Image 1: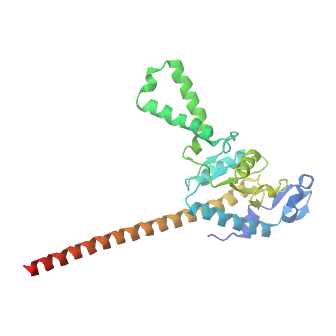
Image 2: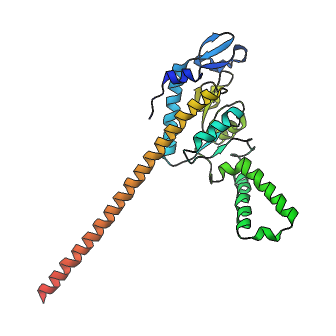
Length: 265
């Protein structure tokens, strides 16, 4: 796994916190100092927490389970979409639908409407509807795709949820915690790190800070997926060798039986 470099975190401004007046008391252990009325995050502690989070995320990815990413802030959504193209993970960059996790069955039914509309377009069924009905259906599909299209392949609850800002995504964090789903998050000095399982003390507002943290996150996930692929291939090859060995043994037994039968004659 790629080593977290303190100089990279520093250059990206990961250490810049909020105004001292906005400090959450539970963030005190992660604050190095205050400067010009702002808190400065201790990057050594950020590195420790980030390393822990990366190991956890890699393990989940290697197991084949899904990690749901949530980043709806303007400066974070495009960064997330850029990085997440590398892996097949669900994500939310528009608004969070209440009950997306706690009422997952209903959300899945809503997402399935996308498939139904697409099938109607493919088989021509949609053409039997009136122009007004078709227009409304297209509008419904566009809305569903915008807000839920990125989780269309998430057929069951994720093993973990990663959020960029736990204040903005507090409902997502609450729903995940309620269902005992592991939570990972970038946590700024104005937030409570105790609300998530794997807090990463960091600037969750600056684009460069979000970008560097997510780059580490997705590299660890990619590594986990690659290791999973190698293990599955090794298992497949081993199974194929075992099957071939059984075939060879059966052929050998048949040859011995044939020789034995001919000798008796």
